[in-house]
Image (cartoon, rainbow, N blue to C red; front, side, top):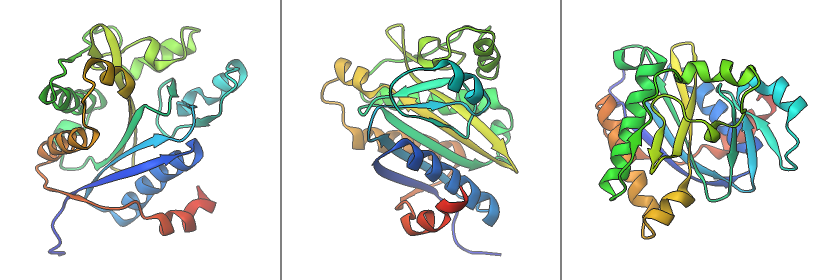
Length: 237
């Protein structure tokens, strides 16, 4: 048995194009699964140009209906379409489900993660709340959009999305496979700066990472995105 302690591995990444960002998240998820790695990964990143990410199951519909004039790329997670500006902050969370009972259900894990996100904002002086309209659960949003309603996630909050003054400022989507979950979340950072101009990105990273670490009872360490491994694996993604 390995004596290496399990950690929350924090990756504070740069801005990249949509293809790279989605490939990086998929690579990290695959690597965790293949190595049965018990560590939890939290990656922060941005998009280097305005980009649309499209939920996995919505790709065919989006390709036929969306004429945005900006690049769009398929996400590994579900949900609708997210419009990412260059100021928006994105995160991905990869974690083993086995042994983490509160994370066995999508709705419960979505709530727990967004509670920590909301607490991180509140610790910085931004009073947020979670959307509680129970008819709009995260897993049901995809089917609502397929019935012809708005395809864009930030236009219509669902259960446990993070709200600020009646506006959705953070949402997410999940994928679960082979005992691991991937949650990809988007934060409207520009809106937060309008409310709290001196908002520190690095302090937010620390507070949110601390909250996620507490959920899994893990201490955290900052690591780098394994760029060389990702480059070598990119041909298969």
